[in-house]
Each structure stands twice: as structure tokens, then as C-alpha cells.
Image (cartoon, rainbow, N blue to C red; front, side, top):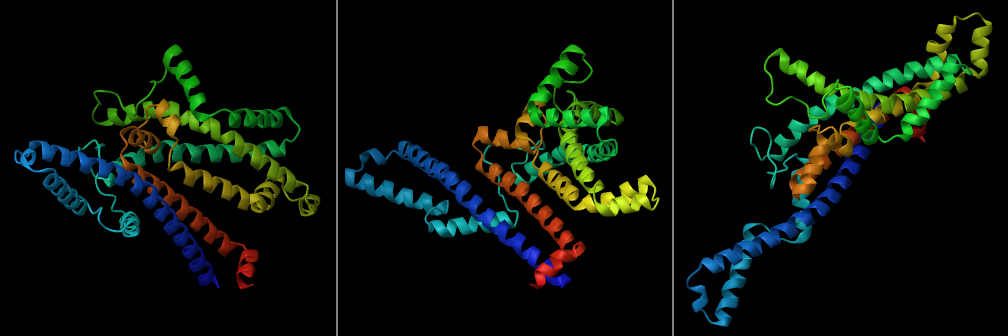
Length: 349
């Protein structure tokens, strides 16, 4: 039974991943081929202009010569194959993580490999957004529990009001406010980047990195923890009204045990789901926020690739983000299937 749950969830995730890969291969493959076709025409024009014998040919000979040259170039770049075959080949390359070389962009080491470019940006996004999401989740859960305990108090109303306010503010807009306040007026933090120029060496490099990380990390945490606190507060508050909680309190069970033992266990599934989805989604970064803070992560890489019209990097970036999200959701789904007997009984039916 457990094996069936694991296999079914893995198959679902794989099918979804294949659909995503085929869609990405079609969209970005079409864009890449349009650019490649234009490149072929430009190369042919250069070759014809540099060929001294071409002007001496008759019109029919020129047309035949140009047609043969076009066919040769299309064969050279693989454009002579059927469209479906090209899409399937692109999909196979993507799903085996062979993204090829970037058209324009390079990594800091000078490599044009798309994999190298992504592996350079992904850890920076993880350090900022994944760490910020984790901190925000922990703070939000703690404050949500406390607000539910003190329902109706000033603290509870403050948390609820702050949650609505913080969630309504876009992260990039709050980031701009923080830059104005903490960088230009108070001059406490730098306005952007992830390291000073020229970069320091030794332990000073690490400290300088933390110094640049502080302001964008604070922004991520401020935007995230309010909504987590509000949701956990409402879930816990609803569970506190249940009969078994009333019975536990009547039996003299300590309040901490009631809260952390009974209530938190009952509200764990939706809280885990929200937290996990936030963490998985954080691997893709936030495009506008990374641009605001000039943070060289996955979001800013996507924008840079869009500006440069670099389809290879766009394809690799999108696939990696989707892959992490799909795998994460599959792991979460498997965990639910193993822990919740209702899901297991549903599988049997």
C-alpha cells in the first residue's frame, strides 16, 4: 500500500514534469529557431557578398546557388528535421539537464554553459529567499500561536492588522522604501549588490556578504511572516473551540501541552502545506525584488536573459525552477499519503 502511494505520486510528478518540458521545449524552441533562421539568412548574405564569383552568375544560377547554400545551412543547424522531431530532441536535452551554451550571457568565470550560469545564480537565491522564507515561517508560526492564545488582546489585533498590511505591500515596493530609509537617509545598509567592489578577501568577504544580505533578507521576512502568523492564528483559534480541547483543559492538562501537543498537531497539515509551498517557490527568486536590490539570483538572471533575448538561459532557468517546485510538491504529497490514513484509504478505493 505504501509502495503504491509512493509510485503513484512519483508517476504523477513525472507526467507533469514531462508536460512542462514539452511545453517549454515548444515555446522556447520556436523562439530559438526563429532567431536561428534569421542568423542563417545573415550568414548567407555575408557569404554571398564575400564570394567574388557570385555576381558573375546568371539569375537562375544565383537562385540555385543560394537555395543550395540555405539547405546546407539548415542541415548544419538541424533545421531540416521535422518540427516534432526537433521539439522532442529539445525536450530530451532539457530533461537530461543538457541546456547547451548561452547565446549571449556568461558566468563570472567566463563560461557560456547554461548549467554553469544557473548554478552560479541558484545558491544566491537560496541564501536570500529560501533563508528569508524559512525565518519568516518560523517567526509567523510562533507569533500566530501567541496571538491565538491571547485572542482579543492588543497583541492579537496588532498581529492581524500587521498581517493584512504586510501582505498587501508588494515585496519590491517595500524593498524600495527600505532602500530609501536605511541606505540613503540612515546610511546603515548598502542599497544593492551582494558584495562590495573591489571584493574584500578572507573573513572580510563573508562579513561584507552578510552586510549586503541584511536589507533584502529583512524585506523578505517582513513581507512573509505576517501572513503566516495570521493564517496560523486563525487555524489555531478555530481548533481551540473544539470539544476535545475543552475536555483536555477540563482534565487539567497544562496550557502549553494543549497548545503544542493537541492543537498544533491538528493544525499541522495546512501549516506544513503553506510553509512547504512558500519554501519551494522561493527557489525561483523574485524577479522585480532582485532587480531592486541588484541581487544576482535566479529572478535577476531571468530578467537579464529576457533583455539579451537569450532563449537557452530562459529555458534552463524556467525548467530548474519548475523542477524544484514539482519535486517538492511530490515529496509533500508522498508525506501526506504516508502520514494520513484517510489518503491511504482513498488510494484503496
